[in-house]
Image (cartoon, rainbow, N blue to C red):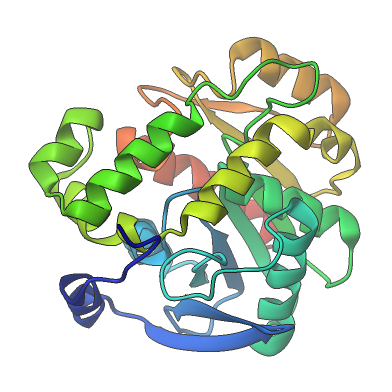
Length: 280
């Protein structure tokens, strides 16, 4: 079985996405970005561990009246190259390369899950100027904090399904609450995620401590989390509020960890509310 594949049917999805594919280099790694255009403030969107850029199309479309969304295929996913390092520092360097390579003037960062961790590290490093960050359900597992609630075996099992060929009905058995289009996109795009990228990133969820970075994330910043999330619990949110009082955690009702997919309207409303003061 191949390690990774991009299906022709997946590439065809891009014809229906109102964005331009752009390319930048981070060292030797080529990174693909979906640029939704417009004259608004750039918003760099950083997806989760098995979410290629196109799977956040439904989020980007709802923000184009407010910002210029640019959704990144994080290395090892979608159309971006695989290989090299998959730690938070490498991911932050890739994000910095996107900002510089596309000449983005003080962009905002919006990250979900893995992407929220990347946004936090990028902000703390301060290598590129930012207007602010919105972190959505960042994994708060780490050394001495217990395991990430979804096992690596679960992720790799779903990847194997995608590599042998899956469909929206099979995806729905794991993610029954998702909108049908998002189940279909996952069925076609999950196979573009490299096994090594998933494995190394999951390892990082338990070896790299979010709280090593979070207290230093500068304002303005916002922390959103699913009210039913096992990744950011109420206790985690309370600790996050104590350690970085610049952000007041906001719970998204009806959402688990996959906040945008579980409760799209509430999640998008919360993101818009978080972005509004950062755009003033």
